[in-house]
Image 1 (cartoon, helix red, strand yellow):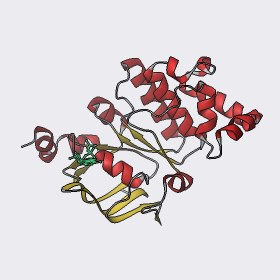
Image 2 (cartoon, protein in one colour):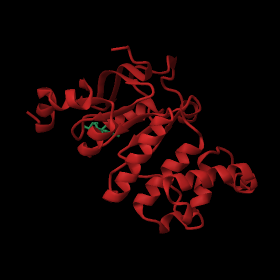
Image 3 (cartoon, rainbow, N blue to C red):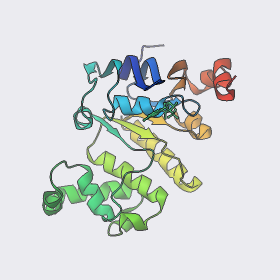
Length: 247
Ligand code: ADP
């Protein structure tokens, strides 16, 4: 097989919280242009890993690179500018803004007033409408974010991430708390965006979704990878079963 091109990668990444080592010398590399998944039992360090590589928290040790550029300890907006977008486990939208306002703030870092006034920028509105249509919620443009379903809020968050046109998209539990019909829609979206060249790194508990969607799966246990490979390789690895059974 031809060697994979590296997307996001870490070497010896470590993060401690007091006496707890949440991420323990993790050396991981995800594949550019692929759908990558990060799985593992509860408390295995996936969220902390995600937060370290996206600049939400600073690792104690180790390095993070994206497409070979060192992004260790960089602020979230700088990592975003390098081409990495992310969603959050507990979906982050502004509840008292409309769906469209959420789309327009998603891509800006200036003051809210300026964001809303420059929203007249027709090109940006068009782009936002196109992305809302793509995720299937264009009819909700004028609704307040708090009035749409949780699954629709997750689709809105994804559409907002797409506003910045990131090369790589990190999704933290995209199917969590979402009904089966919308899970299918999210899966279809990930597939089509990946076919257009976007790399995905997904933390997800829904095994059926992970195994059906991913090209490359990394399994975490106790803060570091214990196994990686295609879904079929990972599913038949006894270490993975042991980790999940807590033996
Ligand atoms: P996962 O996402 O795989 O469930 P986490 O990264 O949330 O795992 O947690 C890994 C370990 O780190 C757990 O033991 C958790 O209790 C601990 N941990 C995570 N965040 C904090 C924090 N802010 N303060 C203290 N301990 C934490």
